[in-house]
Image 1 (cartoon, one colour):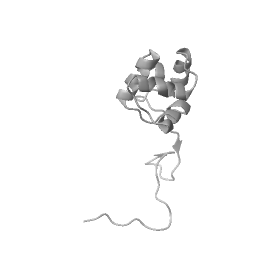
Image 2: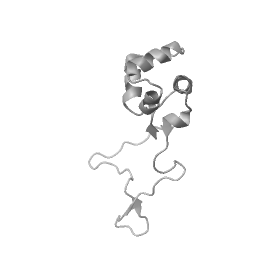
Image 3: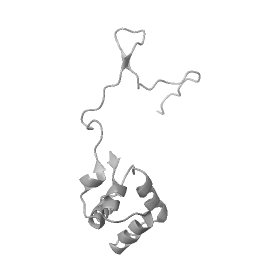
Length: 110
């Protein structure tokens, strides 16, 4: 997903994170300076739906305007390349997690 907050804010005449924070406060969403800085400068990993609703109201847009899909849809993940394992009956994927060499794993609790 591409986070399009700064572009939508610029279209609404908001050029700084402090201006956006002030507008959000006027709409009833108090946001910390740190959280606003994070929302302004990079794509958030999570966002509350209530917060997203206020952002859209202030900017006069929809969630689809702020969250623009990129790449493949989640329902069709990219296939990882196959790699040889020395065992022809069970090929593994390049992203398989392998135990680290050295110490053996402990037994699970009873």
